[in-house]
Image (cartoon, rainbow, N blue to C red; front, top):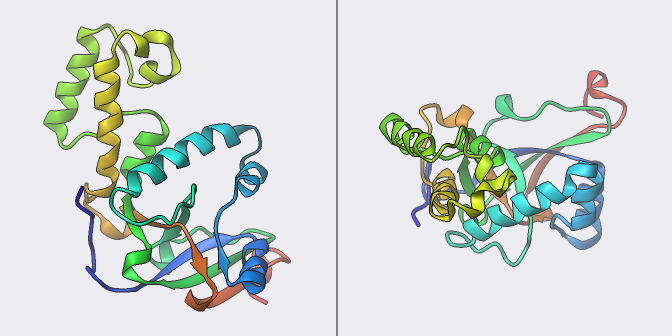
Length: 206
């Protein structure tokens, strides 16, 4: 599988919003990986869904990038003006990741994966796929995953699942807005800036 590139072979400053626990772990051990308990704490009743989703993402990504055996990705924005905005109890980290440590993802297409939808190559491909759904009496792709209908149309279900891998190769029209980055590890030496908002976003960095 090919890899979407913007600045091939270069390290890059990326931005991520995290809890202060991440930096405390970096200070203790020098590196951070997402653990299952972190996922459960963040997502509550939805943690099972995100566990399956992120494990699929990591399996697909590992065909392109060495994920080091970590099960869950860490998400980054490509530019400061596109980053998640700070909230109370959060920190914004500017991280310089080596080229071999991160993978670009078509974030618009990722939204399709999150909802069990087909990731089309083009408008024509999308129309072809929708016609195939209609021919088989299906209204939406998610019926293949959320109902027993997936058992009756395994080839169509596999086609949808296979299309999800395009999130790593399909480049959006607006690169800065439509692309996110993921890594499976953070190291303390990669941190370039920390902005703490423990008193609330409106108080500004401490």
